[in-house]
Length: 110
Image (cartoon, rainbow, N blue to C red; front, side, top):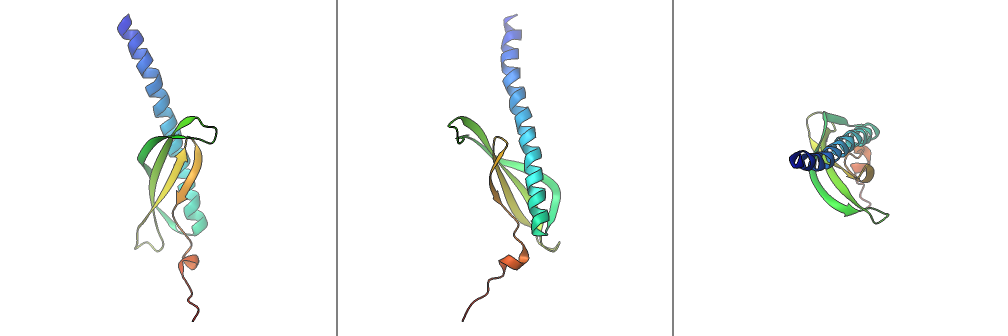
């Protein structure tokens, strides 16, 4: 009987952690896809992979999981760049990724 109770106390938090991770991964996919569409670049592999996780305080002062996801994109199909979506819980706190080609060109004034 004690073993069953211990397993339940371990299984419930593990299940909640897994569920919140899956939900964050789906949200990261949407942000990565949307960023690529808005920048006019090709989203590669149709996936985002979690590359880091840590505890961090949110704006209310509560601890939450900050997850960093990596996705890849291409400007012309021959190149490959990495972008990152950073979520605190399910809230977007950072997006490093595709920029439209026109804004990457720097005009020098001589």
